Amino acid sequence: MDPRRLRYLQAMGIQAWELRRPLVGDGGGPPPPDEESLWRELIDEIARCTRCDLHRGRTRTVPGVGDRHADWMFIGEAPGEQEDLQGEPFVGRAGKLLDEMIRALGYRREQVYITNIVKCRPPGNRDPKPEEAAACAPYLKRQIALVEPEIILAVGRIAAQNLLKTNAPLSRLRGRVHDYEGIPLVVWYHPAYLLRNPPAKRQAYEDLKLAWRVYRERKKEADG
Ligand code: URA
Image 1 (spheres, rainbow, N blue to C red):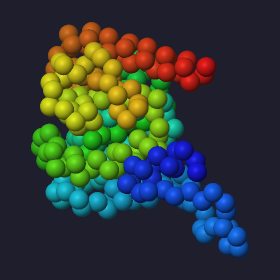
Image 2: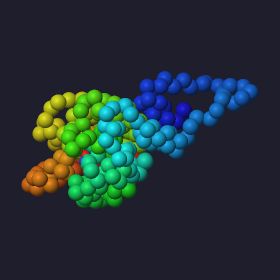
Image 3: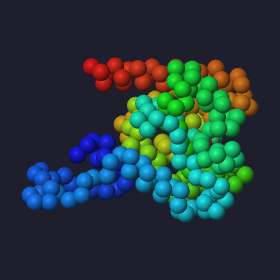
Image 4: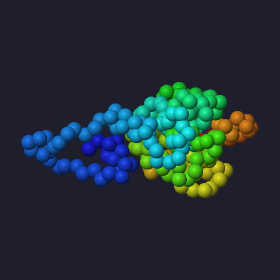
């Protein structure tokens, strides 16, 4: 079985059995769904989701955007007002700064994949509650399994704490490399914080350099 599909099924909690020999006669049943249909199914499920109360206040769900095979995956916290209206993550002021940082890495927004811990806007832009993040986590897991990024950037404290399952403050999480199920993860300041505290941009830039070094190393190893 294609390793990407196997990881995706594992992310869904499905035990994937592989036949050693094809079944004689009917060819082993219906063909497995292709990647395009797995994405479609995922986006549809998110659009219809009522797993937590956030669905009551949403205008649109905000599943994610970008290259579905991107090496870089940026994971923020939750949609804000503009994101809820447009159905796209990081399109407000904070998003402009995120775009700048992505450009500093040498990419355009369409070349990375951007999503959030929760896919619906929390009222008044409050932090998502642990039960809301937990309800949404299986969607994120499936996205990560499909994209298979080489590196994850956790954008802000909420994203970092949820992905790393910790309550440690951002100051203890940034500046080093973590592991998310075999994928290197670097914690980054939330751009909304950087807008309020421009001097922190220096450290944010250091974090980007760290992420870039980790990414290059990983690519070098992969390319032999
Ligand atoms: N902040 C986030 O964390 N995510 C968005 O999509 C927008 C703002």
